[in-house]
Image (cartoon, rainbow, N blue to C red):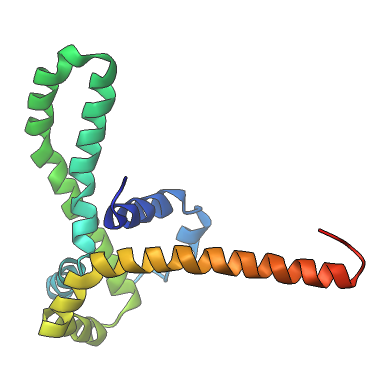
Length: 172
């Protein structure tokens, strides 16, 4: 079973891949190229907020998936494939850095430099570090709570719909 943090990461990737092209058209107008200092600040937010780890974990997960997929029916490939995967890992780890840069540029489109400085200061503070560190377990707890909540809401809604339909002479 996937851990929640992996579920959340997979969900983020899935949302990114499933986003309709129209969303790109709705982006903020092109701004001047950010300075190196602004990009560094935004990267700092992406990294210290924990978002970067969501990108970085994808590389080993994809490599593992490739390994499992290819060796499921061709177990004789395991030894050579493991060597190949290990050799190309660093090449693809750099791709995670590309996504960190992309995320940083997106932050720069939506937040002012002052806002990014404030956010960065928060994530560097003891409270910010605790917040980031607590996210995986909090997300898991919220996921469990949301499952119970949504199940109860579903039952309650159906009960109310049946009551109201019964008033109209329909038995469901």
